[in-house]
Length: 407
Length: 147
Image 1 (tube, rainbow over the protein chains, first blue to last red):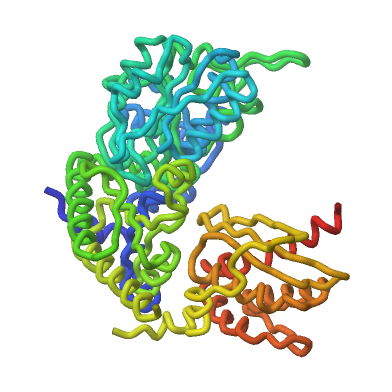
Image 2: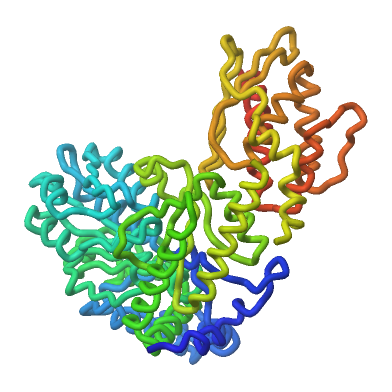
């Protein structure tokens, strides 16, 4: 069991008032808060270690390189990759997915080929594919969703064909909270000779990830949603695929030999890390991984599952509130109130110190599928409590009362 | 329960425009149709304007959005109707200043209901909702100018 009160003490930002009320932060699916351990690691890096990596002969350069590569080893272990050669640091999930689409997609797609995704994807797992199919003449196909916002394997089997070269699916939906059967989808993709790409932005912070067990070919996630700093993320890729891919960015750090008219690249993973890397970000991500490991991903997932269930029970006691997505879900509860627009819900909650997200959550095709223009979303992390849910539900009642009183 | 903070934003007149929007609908014969959305939140409106001899003779809107964006569109269509195009653009500038909490020159205009939106400037996250329909009008005249 984890002690949430002890965990909360480690997040300085939570101990403040917003609009005169204690902050209730329910927007961790957008970005998580950072524990002291992570903030201190980044500060210590800049105060004691800062230097460029992989070049200087001097001592600080060695320390910085050790810190950076040490973080890579932590990531490898965290996602159970077989080698650090398969762990590429990126700016975040968006960059990681763009790297796969641009580098792997452009080289391996041609007219007649298919890329298969789902309507629940975040824009960052839609637009890179739209662009790459436009450039290559391939086709983009969607696995239809079940009415409850889940994916049926039968539909995957009916959508993926011998022409499918890439299947790309999010592991956890940032809107519906759906936990998708990635391992089974990957197996279907592989039966048809396609590669499996996973958007792990919403899963990696909240559950154990084993890329070898999932047998995915690429896996992307962001540091800032898992207690780490912004500006750091990871692309995992199977070595045999990465070896045959062209670099995404060209310049310093990623080269082997440079001539006037031609150059060669460093080995993996550095050939994908052009320019001075995100050293402090990687160090912060490493500290975030240590922090999450100390608490245990299983404990975190269990806690969030409980909070989501509790929130759904509480919300269902309010008349006119619709909740989107399946019963079994991650710590995300997206909803609408039939008489208050989600922006107005979010503003009323904000005056109560409660931070929720309102809008389309970077998932316009999913909003269309839900037949709404916007929704409000409460998302939970390890530092949230049942009291947070109670405050949130009381705030929502207030919003309904206020708007009900107006009409 | 106290609604003091909220009352500053959601003034009675705003809620009245939200509940009973003026000029909601489509023009039979419009000169300008401008679609504008707020990509971060999904609000989307279409503003329709009829211009005769440099004067806005009619204005209507359709769309979906929150209370602030719809009330603002309702007020905006009401206040620009009958204005010369350049006067309407000037009013849009005044409204923009109001939203940014700046001093604004109201001498030439009867701001009427629009002034109720002043409270939005205290809610930075909602300013874009209030300015959506005004931006649509500006975009429409700019495109017309360039055409």
